[in-house]
Amino acid sequence: MDTLFRSLDLIEPGDLVLYHGSIPDLHGLWLAIPCPCGICRRIDELGLAETRFALADPWGEEPGPFHVRRKSLTRSAACG
Image 1 (cartoon, rainbow, N blue to C red):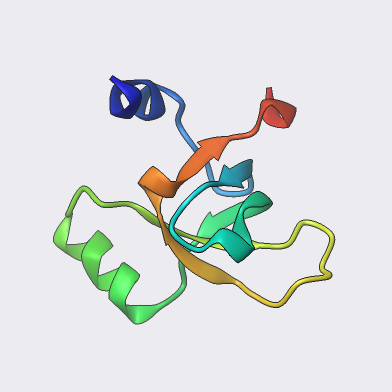
Image 2: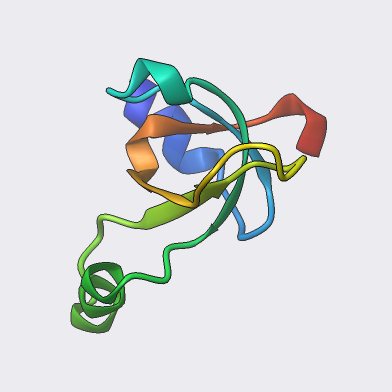
């Protein structure tokens, strides 16, 4: 059921998102941008469903971007 709700909560490039994936040090608020790496570009070209994003610090204080899976993100209420 959680996956259904996430699929309805679409994330667009440039949205503020909350990361809750497997890297605890990255948990928190990020800016979602399309992942620029060659692997993700190839996945997109093949039309596979696993959308990936790169996380960028909205304040520019943290290094990045960090490559993450869509299911590890929730759109922030600050976007609404």
